[in-house]
Image 1 (cartoon, rainbow, N blue to C red):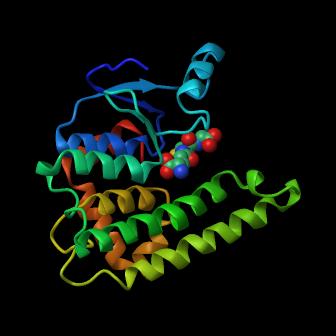
Image 2 (cartoon, rainbow, N blue to C red; image 1 turned 60 degrees about the vertical axis):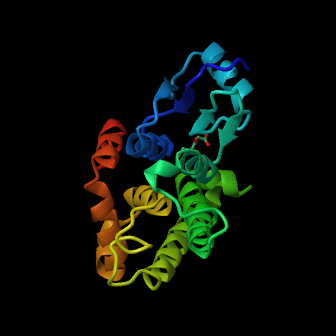
Amino acid sequence: MAATGRYLLYTRKGTAGAAIEAAAGECGIALDLVEVPRECPPDDWAAFLRVNPRGQFPTLVHPDGTVITESTAILVHLADSHPGCGLIPAPGSSARAFHDRWLAFFQVNVYEAILRAEYPDRYTALPDHAPEVRNAAQGYIRQHFALFETVLTDDGPFLLGQRFQMVDLFVWLMVWWSDRGWLARECPRVLRLWEAASSRPALAAAARRHGFS
Ligand SMILES: N[C@@H](CCC(=O)N[C@@H](CS)C(=O)NCC(=O)O)C(=O)O
């Protein structure tokens, strides 16, 4: 793919594209957005599949043409390539290992469970069992938020205290898609993180654009 000189983000309203837009806003990174609506013409969808055969959002294309998928890989790339933004600890530091541990924790446990709750029929060969898949996924989400709650401290609101980092941005997105009433009761520190993150202008703008409520 030819280099464009700018990042290109394939995104869709209501998806994790919001996190990438928010991160770019935090860092002042210019993104060209390609909005791929749900009802998109077959040729446009075929063109998108040539970029990301998985057909998922977000999909970022680096100015040099490299395709980056998986939300957390994109967030880490943006933070590493714009160190002046201070959105991620230095590579190789123990703070970075701690940061990445919890970022991966949310990616593989919570985000994946949110997808199971959203698309339960994809996770069972027995269509009648979709409601059970969804219920189990919702329990899994709560279990992992409860575990993360024990890691947050009074020094917060963020995982690294007062320092807002990419992991907080990702948790912010996960909370948008979770049961905030339950979180307020059972995981008040997680909810405090979400509230503090939500007050950041770049995140508020992305939430508005994606219609989060
Ligand atoms: N592992 C991927 C998951 C991306 C993903 O599942 N995105 C959803 C929207 S939030 C999507 O594109 N769903 C459309 C589909 O799977 O058909 C990531 O971390 O970015």
